[in-house]
Image (tube, rainbow, N blue to C red; front, side, top):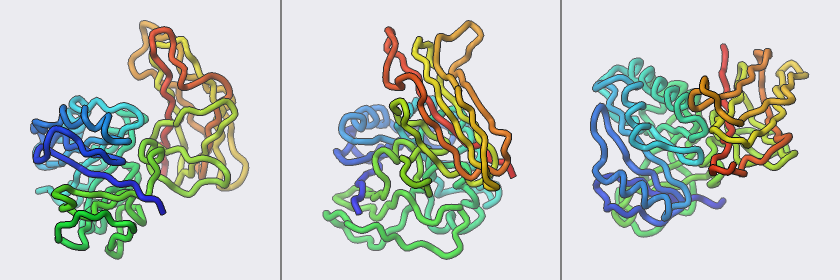
Length: 327
């Protein structure tokens, strides 16, 4: 198995990000703290890492999840293809209230940063008690801290085999990123079983045969006409959206939702993009919600257009999709 290597850094490290597969930079903490080195590290990570992400250290007792998430996004300004993370490891609230707080934070990110991969950092305790319950429905990925040894090392692990507690409540069976040491040449070190495309487009899952992966709650990698992405959907109904910058470029998609009972429903001509009007707000969306309430997978196929082609002003249409699961 080929594993991605990554570091997470904060103000304790220097302004230059390590050259590695992925770097996750601390941006904010709690109600008001912003890392003094975030701007420099974030800029450096763009050129030195193959993927960059940013994280917020949660202080649920200090203020609402919405206010902390909003300030975090204002500082980071993430774009599709990047990732954002909630570092959930300290809270003075109860398990139930911390869990609700984290879910609200994740939902705010999905609504206000469409196309950006979201994840939660939590250890074995939170992942197996009420604090982490069902967080897989509110975040794309799980970043897990578990150190098999406290010894300093200069050698990367070559296997992805973290110890996991029994009775996981978080909804994931295994983490997507494993922080396996806090002392690889003085840095936190992480391994991931994901590809760079998956890290940029959200979590992996069980897919229909012979189709590429795209992500629930994620950006759609640029497709060519006739290419199709398929994703499983645990339950409920789905929405497809397209962020429409003020662009002359338009894209037409064919969306298919499959019913667990067999059959399905198709939206053949969902158009996203195009010039904005005075009534538009950013991001403008085109949505389709299937009438089915038992969707188990859905797919999206590009029928016409080129997602990577900018207009005369250099602006492009950034498509994405999400799942609005119903009970």
